[in-house]
Image (cartoon, rainbow, N blue to C red; front, side):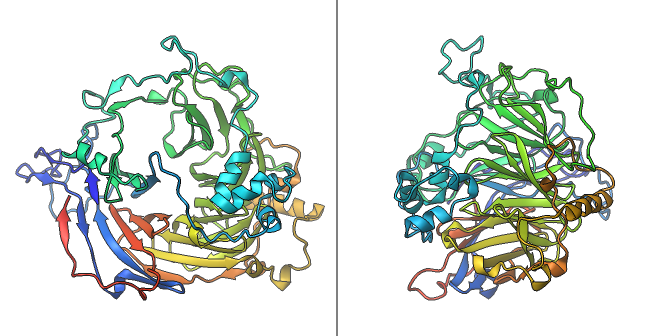
Length: 564
């Protein structure tokens, strides 16, 4: 592995030495080690996962635009600034056609069709159709993407981008700012690897790149041994500069499925904003005269307040769309594999399911207590998994619109959840979770396991009586008396779902629970050959999957270290 970039020495003085005039130079380097021993192994039913490497990222000193940390007393306790931890974004640049042998067992046309969520099954696909071959050949994701309509379809204002500096609408707008020559406080320095060109030429076309955020710095890592693609441009553009569209910080951001230019940003004021990277910004005034409705309607429950629709004809500048979801911070969101639904979790303890193509709120669920921090979809789009401040992982069914199981095993907040698509099929699922208790937990469940306890058998799935609906609304009103949920919904009582009592909820134990770091964990990802975890302090650990025919793992040499 080579790591980009290796930061150099920073100047000494009060700014970087905590107020000590005679402080030493700070030298930050990425450190790669290979720990060994039983404590660095994960023993599961399919074999033993072995820690391949532990990469400790260089933690940058304070940004020059920030006030220096004053600590004149060496015995004083300096508060640690808040952090979201080390978050990764994995990608393959221009990959060749790969034949990934996943564990999707869609052997028949009937099973392939039954594995699809309702939005796909209602399309009228017949056995043996093109969709069936997609499901068996390339997995569910490719089939779903092929069926999903484009964002803003039918709106001619979103077809092309016409600007005063763009003669040809089909050409991309070039960024104006140069990272190297920038004097902005937004970007202070860029440090490329000294042999960058050579490393890029040696890169494996199917190798993973990782873009890693740690505090205010971003590092570009190559998680493979070879490379051959051009580096990213040294140009950049800034959107929502000075909060011209939304002045609150961004808590999560992702590209919209099936689009090249649009991305969705979640803001801490509870707003979701769709930006176009090719459009200029302008002062944003909501199309409904800028007036927000009441935050919660006790009669009709929550709703999606559309401040600007994707179908708006006014698309000369950003935003493309703007939706008010909550009055509190949106912690995370995830797009469904069918590219139609959006799962949003927020600090108010709610999980919302949104049809973002129709701009419609479908369902809203609540936690036992506290906010929900993380969310992900199963590869087939049937289930949604969340984790949060109640120390629980929850499994929700999209088709049945209900909670199907709680997963108990963490002793602190759950910070990340993810499915392992290489150990999922149409009936059996594997997912993992990490939390502030420094533990990695793996969970297995099957469709047959998710049965309802006998105490709940009197209530049929998908049917809620009028009395129960009224009770659910009053229960939510009592639990959320501060009106943290948003308002103005369609006249649809089924949107708001009651909090399921623990006695009526199936409990799922983990198949693995182990402390894998000394610091709170922040991120979890599954790849074909490994599991990757990261913590708040900059550790990225790669766990090799069990090798077929080689027992439970390979014996590694003693721990070694190297500066990168």
